Image 1 (cartoon, one colour):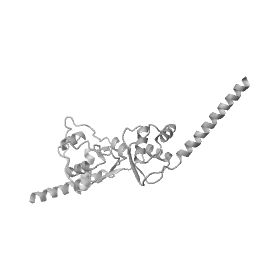
Image 2 (cartoon, rainbow, N blue to C red):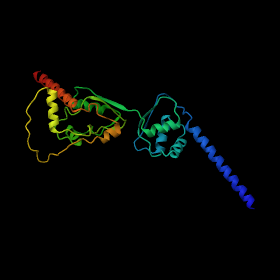
Image 3 (cartoon, one colour):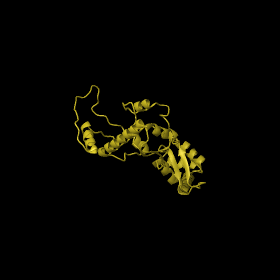
Image 4 (cartoon, rainbow, N blue to C red):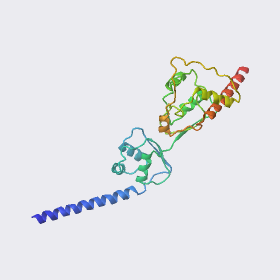
Length: 261
């Protein structure tokens, strides 16, 4: 009797081993077999907050995936179920499920872009933002004063505060971000930079701090850096001041011409 039981257990262990081996071979074959995509390049989007199952179905609907449940199983076995990153993705050709999983968990997505042309007014920049289909328009119905208040800027006009450049971002990003350097400069440092940019000296009258003035004000840039992988192109006080001075001179010239007309 014991011999029969022992043989039965050995048989079950052999069957279990064969099943594990067969599953391993199947998983390896599935992971590294190209997915047939219906067009190239193929673009698809994963919505923010998507679960692994939802992401797999979105990719299937876009033609980037044939079997959602197999892909979901692969992701769970690799411990990637909670690492799916939202964004716009592009496949330039055939891709394996393993490579596709790595792509959507590493954030290897395509980026949208928007261009602010030098010389544009704040109104023109807002119009470009509002017309862009890849941006979530959180400021469309806000007045200029309300936009400044959201950004924590205590000024009446936004003119001259936003620099012309080409900005890259993930599709569906909000249009509200703090753009800055994550560090500050003292008033004296700024005054000295203005002197250098203007090429002349001028008197600066020092006075006591006004009631309520903070000792330090620095823009928190973690969100824009983390979401858009954005870094400032001109990370130099002298360059910043020179651009600002050029802008003010150009604006004064435009106002002079407008008044003369």
